[in-house]
Image 1: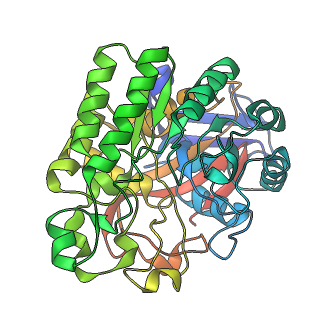
Image 2 (image 1 turned 30 degrees about the vertical axis):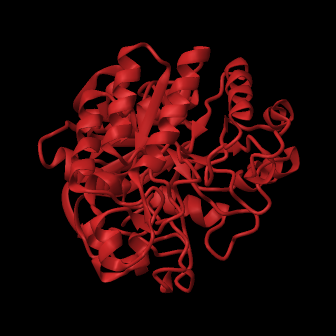
Length: 420
Protein backbone atom coordinates (compact mmCIF):
# COMPACT_ATOMS: atom_id res chain seq x y z
CA UNK A 1 0.00 0.00 0.00
CA UNK A 2 1.56 3.25 -1.19
CA UNK A 3 1.67 6.51 0.70
CA UNK A 4 -0.10 8.94 -1.61
CA UNK A 5 -0.23 12.68 -2.20
CA UNK A 6 -2.94 14.11 -4.43
CA UNK A 7 -1.83 17.56 -5.56
CA UNK A 8 -3.80 20.60 -6.66
CA UNK A 9 -7.26 19.01 -6.66
CA UNK A 10 -10.56 20.80 -6.11
CA UNK A 11 -11.39 19.28 -2.71
CA UNK A 12 -15.09 19.08 -1.83
CA UNK A 13 -15.89 17.60 1.58
CA UNK A 14 -19.37 18.58 2.82
CA UNK A 15 -18.76 17.04 6.24
CA UNK A 16 -15.95 19.52 6.91
CA UNK A 17 -17.33 22.41 4.82
CA UNK A 18 -14.29 22.24 2.54
CA UNK A 19 -14.58 23.53 -1.01
CA UNK A 20 -11.13 24.66 -2.16
CA UNK A 21 -8.09 23.70 -4.19
CA UNK A 22 -5.40 21.89 -2.25
CA UNK A 23 -3.51 18.68 -1.51
CA UNK A 24 -4.64 15.43 0.13
CA UNK A 25 -2.29 13.05 1.94
CA UNK A 26 -2.86 9.34 2.48
CA UNK A 27 -0.69 7.26 4.80
CA UNK A 28 -1.19 3.63 5.81
CA UNK A 29 -4.68 3.55 4.35
CA UNK A 30 -6.08 6.64 6.09
CA UNK A 31 -6.19 10.36 5.38
CA UNK A 32 -3.24 12.12 6.97
CA UNK A 33 -1.84 15.48 7.91
CA UNK A 34 0.82 16.67 5.41
CA UNK A 35 4.01 14.62 5.59
CA UNK A 36 7.14 14.03 3.50
CA UNK A 37 8.05 10.70 1.95
CA UNK A 38 10.47 10.55 -0.96
CA UNK A 39 8.86 7.33 -2.15
CA UNK A 40 5.24 8.47 -2.00
CA UNK A 41 3.05 8.23 -5.07
CA UNK A 42 2.18 11.73 -6.29
CA UNK A 43 -1.04 12.14 -8.25
CA UNK A 44 -1.72 15.33 -10.20
CA UNK A 45 -5.28 16.40 -9.40
CA UNK A 46 -5.23 19.55 -11.51
CA UNK A 47 -8.66 20.09 -13.05
CA UNK A 48 -10.20 17.25 -11.05
CA UNK A 49 -12.60 17.27 -8.11
CA UNK A 50 -11.70 15.13 -5.08
CA UNK A 51 -14.67 13.96 -3.01
CA UNK A 52 -15.40 11.22 -0.47
CA UNK A 53 -15.95 7.82 -2.06
CA UNK A 54 -19.59 7.12 -2.79
CA UNK A 55 -21.71 4.96 -0.48
CA UNK A 56 -24.34 2.94 -2.37
CA UNK A 57 -27.17 1.79 -0.10
CA UNK A 58 -28.69 -0.63 -2.60
CA UNK A 59 -26.66 -3.19 -4.56
CA UNK A 60 -27.30 -6.75 -5.74
CA UNK A 61 -23.97 -8.59 -6.01
CA UNK A 62 -25.72 -11.91 -6.88
CA UNK A 63 -23.23 -14.06 -4.97
CA UNK A 64 -23.77 -16.73 -3.76
CA UNK A 65 -25.68 -18.68 -6.34
CA UNK A 66 -26.21 -16.31 -9.28
CA UNK A 67 -22.64 -15.67 -10.36
CA UNK A 68 -23.47 -15.87 -14.07
CA UNK A 69 -24.95 -12.37 -13.53
CA UNK A 70 -22.35 -10.88 -11.17
CA UNK A 71 -20.12 -11.89 -8.30
CA UNK A 72 -18.60 -10.06 -5.35
CA UNK A 73 -15.31 -9.35 -7.12
CA UNK A 74 -16.82 -8.25 -10.46
CA UNK A 75 -19.49 -6.19 -8.75
CA UNK A 76 -16.89 -4.33 -6.73
CA UNK A 77 -14.87 -3.66 -9.89
CA UNK A 78 -17.98 -2.00 -11.31
CA UNK A 79 -18.35 -0.08 -8.04
CA UNK A 80 -14.77 1.19 -8.20
CA UNK A 81 -15.22 2.33 -11.80
CA UNK A 82 -18.19 4.40 -10.62
CA UNK A 83 -16.44 5.92 -7.60
CA UNK A 84 -18.36 3.70 -5.15
CA UNK A 85 -16.10 2.67 -2.25
CA UNK A 86 -18.77 1.29 0.12
CA UNK A 87 -21.87 -0.68 -0.82
CA UNK A 88 -24.76 -2.45 0.88
CA UNK A 89 -25.30 -5.93 -0.58
CA UNK A 90 -28.93 -7.09 -0.67
CA UNK A 91 -30.02 -10.53 0.57
CA UNK A 92 -31.88 -12.02 -2.43
CA UNK A 93 -29.04 -14.35 -3.35
CA UNK A 94 -29.23 -18.15 -3.71
CA UNK A 95 -29.40 -19.14 -0.93
CA UNK A 96 -30.76 -15.95 0.60
CA UNK A 97 -28.68 -14.24 3.28
CA UNK A 98 -30.66 -15.86 6.08
CA UNK A 99 -27.94 -17.80 7.94
CA UNK A 100 -24.68 -16.78 9.66
CA UNK A 101 -22.78 -19.07 7.28
CA UNK A 102 -23.91 -17.11 4.21
CA UNK A 103 -23.05 -13.80 5.89
CA UNK A 104 -19.56 -15.05 6.72
CA UNK A 105 -19.07 -16.37 3.19
CA UNK A 106 -19.83 -12.97 1.64
CA UNK A 107 -17.65 -11.05 4.08
CA UNK A 108 -14.74 -13.45 3.58
CA UNK A 109 -15.00 -13.22 -0.21
CA UNK A 110 -15.23 -9.42 -0.01
CA UNK A 111 -11.92 -9.06 1.82
CA UNK A 112 -10.11 -8.92 -1.51
CA UNK A 113 -12.70 -6.83 -3.35
CA UNK A 114 -12.31 -3.28 -4.69
CA UNK A 115 -14.97 -1.79 -2.39
CA UNK A 116 -16.06 -2.17 1.21
CA UNK A 117 -18.98 -4.62 1.24
CA UNK A 118 -21.64 -4.34 3.94
CA UNK A 119 -24.10 -7.21 4.14
CA UNK A 120 -27.89 -7.07 4.53
CA UNK A 121 -29.41 -9.92 6.52
CA UNK A 122 -32.80 -11.29 5.55
CA UNK A 123 -35.76 -10.60 7.85
CA UNK A 124 -37.46 -13.88 6.89
CA UNK A 125 -36.12 -17.23 5.70
CA UNK A 126 -35.82 -17.38 1.91
CA UNK A 127 -37.54 -13.97 1.84
CA UNK A 128 -40.88 -15.80 1.98
CA UNK A 129 -42.42 -13.94 4.97
CA UNK A 130 -43.22 -17.30 6.56
CA UNK A 131 -40.55 -17.72 9.23
CA UNK A 132 -38.38 -14.99 10.84
CA UNK A 133 -34.61 -15.30 10.82
CA UNK A 134 -32.39 -15.26 13.90
CA UNK A 135 -31.44 -11.60 13.66
CA UNK A 136 -29.04 -11.71 16.60
CA UNK A 137 -27.13 -14.61 15.00
CA UNK A 138 -26.97 -12.74 11.69
CA UNK A 139 -25.72 -9.64 13.49
CA UNK A 140 -23.07 -11.64 15.33
CA UNK A 141 -21.92 -12.95 11.93
CA UNK A 142 -21.47 -9.39 10.66
CA UNK A 143 -24.59 -7.97 8.98
CA UNK A 144 -24.96 -4.18 8.77
CA UNK A 145 -28.68 -3.90 7.93
CA UNK A 146 -31.91 -5.88 7.61
CA UNK A 147 -34.24 -6.28 4.63
CA UNK A 148 -36.09 -8.80 2.49
CA UNK A 149 -35.36 -6.59 -0.53
CA UNK A 150 -36.37 -8.20 -3.74
CA UNK A 151 -39.66 -8.71 -1.94
CA UNK A 152 -41.71 -6.90 0.70
CA UNK A 153 -42.07 -8.38 4.19
CA UNK A 154 -45.71 -9.45 3.94
CA UNK A 155 -46.05 -10.43 7.61
CA UNK A 156 -46.41 -7.11 9.42
CA UNK A 157 -45.56 -8.62 12.81
CA UNK A 158 -42.25 -9.90 11.45
CA UNK A 159 -41.51 -6.42 10.11
CA UNK A 160 -42.21 -4.77 13.47
CA UNK A 161 -40.04 -7.28 15.31
CA UNK A 162 -37.21 -6.66 12.84
CA UNK A 163 -37.52 -2.90 13.32
CA UNK A 164 -37.37 -3.31 17.09
CA UNK A 165 -34.35 -5.62 17.00
CA UNK A 166 -32.53 -3.46 14.45
CA UNK A 167 -33.04 -0.43 16.66
CA UNK A 168 -31.46 -2.29 19.58
CA UNK A 169 -28.49 -3.23 17.39
CA UNK A 170 -28.22 0.26 15.81
CA UNK A 171 -28.55 -1.00 12.24
CA UNK A 172 -31.13 0.15 9.66
CA UNK A 173 -34.09 -1.73 8.23
CA UNK A 174 -34.39 -0.99 4.52
CA UNK A 175 -37.89 -1.58 3.19
CA UNK A 176 -38.91 -2.78 -0.25
CA UNK A 177 -42.34 -1.14 -0.31
CA UNK A 178 -44.80 -3.08 -2.40
CA UNK A 179 -48.23 -4.60 -1.95
CA UNK A 180 -47.75 -8.02 -3.59
CA UNK A 181 -51.47 -8.37 -4.28
CA UNK A 182 -51.39 -5.26 -6.45
CA UNK A 183 -47.95 -5.78 -7.97
CA UNK A 184 -46.59 -8.32 -10.43
CA UNK A 185 -46.78 -6.40 -13.68
CA UNK A 186 -44.09 -5.64 -16.22
CA UNK A 187 -44.14 -1.82 -16.56
CA UNK A 188 -45.90 1.14 -14.95
CA UNK A 189 -49.66 0.70 -15.10
CA UNK A 190 -51.25 3.23 -17.41
CA UNK A 191 -50.70 4.52 -20.91
CA UNK A 192 -47.52 2.52 -21.57
CA UNK A 193 -48.79 -0.81 -20.23
CA UNK A 194 -51.90 -0.42 -22.39
CA UNK A 195 -49.84 0.50 -25.45
CA UNK A 196 -47.53 -2.49 -24.99
CA UNK A 197 -50.34 -4.86 -24.11
CA UNK A 198 -48.69 -6.09 -20.90
CA UNK A 199 -49.81 -6.16 -17.28
CA UNK A 200 -48.94 -2.98 -15.42
CA UNK A 201 -47.52 -2.33 -11.95
CA UNK A 202 -49.69 0.40 -10.41
CA UNK A 203 -48.19 3.22 -8.38
CA UNK A 204 -50.67 2.16 -5.70
CA UNK A 205 -48.69 -1.04 -5.08
CA UNK A 206 -45.66 0.99 -4.01
CA UNK A 207 -47.72 3.64 -2.23
CA UNK A 208 -49.59 1.07 -0.12
CA UNK A 209 -46.29 -0.45 0.99
CA UNK A 210 -44.80 2.94 1.77
CA UNK A 211 -47.87 3.90 3.81
CA UNK A 212 -47.60 0.72 5.90
CA UNK A 213 -43.94 1.22 6.75
CA UNK A 214 -44.49 4.87 7.68
CA UNK A 215 -47.42 3.83 9.88
CA UNK A 216 -45.26 1.26 11.68
CA UNK A 217 -42.41 3.72 12.18
CA UNK A 218 -44.85 6.30 13.57
CA UNK A 219 -46.74 3.90 15.82
CA UNK A 220 -43.65 2.34 17.39
CA UNK A 221 -41.36 5.39 17.17
CA UNK A 222 -38.76 3.35 15.27
CA UNK A 223 -36.60 4.23 12.27
CA UNK A 224 -37.27 2.89 8.79
CA UNK A 225 -35.45 3.43 5.49
CA UNK A 226 -37.59 3.35 2.34
CA UNK A 227 -35.91 1.83 -0.74
CA UNK A 228 -36.09 2.96 -4.38
CA UNK A 229 -38.89 5.55 -4.17
CA UNK A 230 -40.43 6.11 -7.61
CA UNK A 231 -43.88 7.69 -7.17
CA UNK A 232 -45.02 11.21 -6.40
CA UNK A 233 -47.51 9.91 -3.82
CA UNK A 234 -44.88 7.95 -1.89
CA UNK A 235 -42.65 11.03 -1.85
CA UNK A 236 -45.55 13.12 -0.54
CA UNK A 237 -46.23 10.62 2.24
CA UNK A 238 -42.56 10.57 3.26
CA UNK A 239 -42.47 14.38 3.27
CA UNK A 240 -45.55 14.52 5.49
CA UNK A 241 -44.16 11.85 7.82
CA UNK A 242 -40.91 13.77 8.27
CA UNK A 243 -42.85 16.91 9.16
CA UNK A 244 -44.61 14.90 11.87
CA UNK A 245 -41.29 13.68 13.28
CA UNK A 246 -41.51 10.11 12.02
CA UNK A 247 -38.05 8.50 11.85
CA UNK A 248 -38.09 7.82 8.13
CA UNK A 249 -35.32 8.12 5.57
CA UNK A 250 -35.60 7.34 1.88
CA UNK A 251 -33.66 6.83 -1.33
CA UNK A 252 -34.41 7.12 -5.01
CA UNK A 253 -32.30 5.95 -7.95
CA UNK A 254 -30.63 7.74 -10.87
CA UNK A 255 -32.99 6.14 -13.39
CA UNK A 256 -36.05 7.58 -11.62
CA UNK A 257 -34.74 11.14 -11.94
CA UNK A 258 -33.53 10.66 -15.52
CA UNK A 259 -35.95 8.42 -17.41
CA UNK A 260 -39.70 7.85 -17.74
CA UNK A 261 -41.87 4.99 -18.94
CA UNK A 262 -41.69 6.46 -22.46
CA UNK A 263 -38.35 4.70 -23.10
CA UNK A 264 -40.16 1.35 -22.97
CA UNK A 265 -41.97 1.92 -26.26
CA UNK A 266 -39.30 -0.10 -28.12
CA UNK A 267 -39.85 -3.13 -25.83
CA UNK A 268 -36.27 -3.26 -24.52
CA UNK A 269 -36.15 -5.15 -21.20
CA UNK A 270 -33.04 -3.25 -20.06
CA UNK A 271 -35.48 -0.47 -19.14
CA UNK A 272 -37.62 -2.77 -17.00
CA UNK A 273 -37.04 -2.63 -13.26
CA UNK A 274 -39.08 -2.82 -10.03
CA UNK A 275 -40.38 -0.29 -9.18
CA UNK A 276 -40.85 0.52 -12.87
CA UNK A 277 -40.01 3.75 -14.61
CA UNK A 278 -43.00 6.03 -14.04
CA UNK A 279 -44.42 9.22 -15.54
CA UNK A 280 -42.86 12.64 -16.00
CA UNK A 281 -44.85 13.84 -13.00
CA UNK A 282 -43.20 11.16 -10.88
CA UNK A 283 -39.74 11.92 -12.27
CA UNK A 284 -40.07 15.58 -11.38
CA UNK A 285 -41.37 14.63 -7.93
CA UNK A 286 -38.21 12.57 -7.32
CA UNK A 287 -36.05 15.55 -8.23
CA UNK A 288 -38.10 17.85 -6.01
CA UNK A 289 -37.85 15.31 -3.19
CA UNK A 290 -34.06 15.33 -3.43
CA UNK A 291 -33.96 19.12 -3.47
CA UNK A 292 -36.29 19.65 -0.48
CA UNK A 293 -34.83 16.89 1.71
CA UNK A 294 -37.71 14.43 1.44
CA UNK A 295 -35.37 11.95 -0.23
CA UNK A 296 -32.14 11.57 1.70
CA UNK A 297 -30.03 9.51 -0.67
CA UNK A 298 -29.41 8.36 -4.21
CA UNK A 299 -28.77 4.62 -4.50
CA UNK A 300 -28.48 2.48 -7.60
CA UNK A 301 -30.46 -0.73 -7.01
CA UNK A 302 -27.67 -2.24 -9.15
CA UNK A 303 -29.35 -5.42 -10.45
CA UNK A 304 -27.31 -7.38 -13.01
CA UNK A 305 -28.90 -9.87 -15.42
CA UNK A 306 -27.43 -11.74 -18.38
CA UNK A 307 -28.04 -10.78 -22.01
CA UNK A 308 -29.98 -14.01 -22.47
CA UNK A 309 -32.28 -13.26 -19.54
CA UNK A 310 -32.98 -9.77 -20.82
CA UNK A 311 -33.59 -10.83 -24.43
CA UNK A 312 -37.34 -11.46 -24.03
CA UNK A 313 -39.20 -8.29 -23.07
CA UNK A 314 -42.07 -10.01 -21.25
CA UNK A 315 -40.20 -12.92 -19.64
CA UNK A 316 -37.10 -10.95 -18.59
CA UNK A 317 -36.45 -10.36 -14.88
CA UNK A 318 -36.65 -6.81 -13.56
CA UNK A 319 -33.50 -4.81 -12.88
CA UNK A 320 -30.65 -2.81 -14.36
CA UNK A 321 -26.98 -2.21 -13.57
CA UNK A 322 -26.13 1.21 -12.22
CA UNK A 323 -22.96 1.73 -10.20
CA UNK A 324 -20.74 2.88 -13.08
CA UNK A 325 -23.25 5.47 -14.27
CA UNK A 326 -24.84 6.60 -11.00
CA UNK A 327 -22.67 9.60 -10.28
CA UNK A 328 -22.49 10.88 -13.85
CA UNK A 329 -26.23 10.46 -14.46
CA UNK A 330 -27.09 12.22 -11.21
CA UNK A 331 -24.53 14.97 -11.90
CA UNK A 332 -25.95 15.51 -15.39
CA UNK A 333 -29.54 15.90 -14.16
CA UNK A 334 -28.93 17.72 -10.90
CA UNK A 335 -25.61 19.61 -11.01
CA UNK A 336 -25.10 20.45 -14.67
CA UNK A 337 -28.65 21.83 -14.71
CA UNK A 338 -27.89 24.10 -11.75
CA UNK A 339 -30.41 22.46 -9.42
CA UNK A 340 -27.72 21.28 -6.99
CA UNK A 341 -24.12 21.95 -6.10
CA UNK A 342 -21.49 19.21 -6.20
CA UNK A 343 -21.37 19.32 -2.40
CA UNK A 344 -25.12 18.74 -2.18
CA UNK A 345 -24.88 15.78 -4.55
CA UNK A 346 -22.05 14.27 -2.49
CA UNK A 347 -24.27 14.63 0.59
CA UNK A 348 -26.89 12.47 -1.17
CA UNK A 349 -24.44 9.89 -2.53
CA UNK A 350 -21.82 9.63 0.24
CA UNK A 351 -22.23 11.55 3.49
CA UNK A 352 -25.89 10.86 4.27
CA UNK A 353 -25.83 7.21 3.12
CA UNK A 354 -22.85 6.65 5.45
CA UNK A 355 -24.88 8.12 8.34
CA UNK A 356 -27.92 5.97 7.54
CA UNK A 357 -25.71 2.88 7.51
CA UNK A 358 -23.72 3.99 10.58
CA UNK A 359 -20.38 3.39 8.87
CA UNK A 360 -17.02 5.15 8.93
CA UNK A 361 -17.24 6.78 5.51
CA UNK A 362 -18.46 9.86 3.67
CA UNK A 363 -15.64 12.23 4.67
CA UNK A 364 -12.04 13.16 3.88
CA UNK A 365 -11.24 13.83 7.56
CA UNK A 366 -7.74 13.06 8.83
CA UNK A 367 -7.65 9.63 10.45
CA UNK A 368 -10.62 8.30 8.48
CA UNK A 369 -10.32 5.48 5.90
CA UNK A 370 -8.87 6.79 2.67
CA UNK A 371 -11.89 6.32 0.40
CA UNK A 372 -11.90 8.94 -2.31
CA UNK A 373 -13.12 9.60 -5.83
CA UNK A 374 -11.50 11.95 -8.33
CA UNK A 375 -13.64 13.03 -11.26
CA UNK A 376 -13.50 15.36 -14.22
CA UNK A 377 -16.55 17.61 -13.81
CA UNK A 378 -16.99 18.84 -17.38
CA UNK A 379 -15.96 15.74 -19.31
CA UNK A 380 -18.68 14.23 -21.47
CA UNK A 381 -18.80 10.53 -22.29
CA UNK A 382 -21.13 8.11 -24.04
CA UNK A 383 -22.21 5.05 -22.07
CA UNK A 384 -21.02 1.96 -23.94
CA UNK A 385 -22.35 -1.20 -22.26
CA UNK A 386 -19.46 -3.25 -23.64
CA UNK A 387 -16.98 -1.14 -21.69
CA UNK A 388 -18.68 -1.59 -18.30
CA UNK A 389 -16.61 -3.45 -15.72
CA UNK A 390 -19.27 -5.77 -14.26
CA UNK A 391 -20.37 -9.08 -15.77
CA UNK A 392 -23.76 -7.83 -16.96
CA UNK A 393 -24.45 -4.98 -19.36
CA UNK A 394 -28.15 -4.24 -18.78
CA UNK A 395 -27.84 -0.48 -18.33
CA UNK A 396 -30.77 1.86 -18.99
CA UNK A 397 -28.23 4.61 -19.72
CA UNK A 398 -26.75 2.89 -22.79
CA UNK A 399 -25.74 5.25 -25.57
CA UNK A 400 -26.58 8.29 -23.44
CA UNK A 401 -24.16 11.20 -23.22
CA UNK A 402 -23.41 12.00 -19.58
CA UNK A 403 -21.39 14.81 -18.02
CA UNK A 404 -18.65 14.21 -15.41
CA UNK A 405 -16.34 11.21 -15.54
CA UNK A 406 -14.81 9.21 -12.71
CA UNK A 407 -11.05 9.16 -13.27
CA UNK A 408 -9.58 7.60 -10.11
CA UNK A 409 -10.95 5.71 -7.11
CA UNK A 410 -9.03 4.92 -3.94
CA UNK A 411 -10.50 2.52 -1.39
CA UNK A 412 -8.81 2.05 1.97
CA UNK A 413 -5.69 3.74 0.63
CA UNK A 414 -5.46 1.42 -2.39
CA UNK A 415 -6.01 2.58 -5.97
CA UNK A 416 -8.86 0.39 -7.22
CA UNK A 417 -9.71 2.25 -10.42
CA UNK A 418 -7.55 4.43 -12.61
CA UNK A 419 -8.70 5.64 -16.03
CA UNK A 420 -5.30 6.38 -17.50
